[in-house]
Length: 151
Image 1: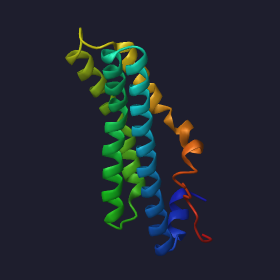
Image 2: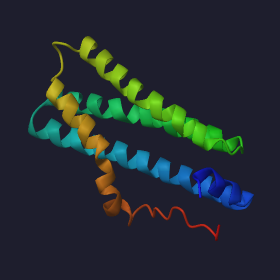
Image 3: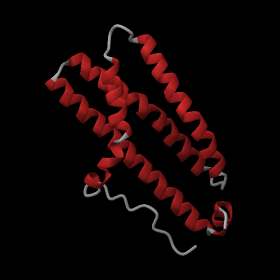
């Protein structure tokens, strides 16, 4: 059974419930990424220095900005109440890595002698791997996603 046939079997109410829960999960995950990046920025700023903490923050934003664009784009496409989400994921799956690479290139050209590129990379990787913190934040933000009726 293909994914497309499974989506076609979803009742319209279940489909909108799924999309609503997915949007809520995505917003909570973005909040966890932002919280993680600010915590790491503060820790590095206190322990090492201001320029390194600014580098961490910029590295975090390199990953957060495309995710924010993705989340806004996804919420807008869900609000249209169409079942063409797979085309959306294919398009954004191609667009997002190129956007991240462009932002990396732009930041490296803009801050050649000003910021520390290893700390930019550390900020990027810490934000990228912030999904490891989801179990910790589950107590504060219940991520009860994908509770559907039978398909």
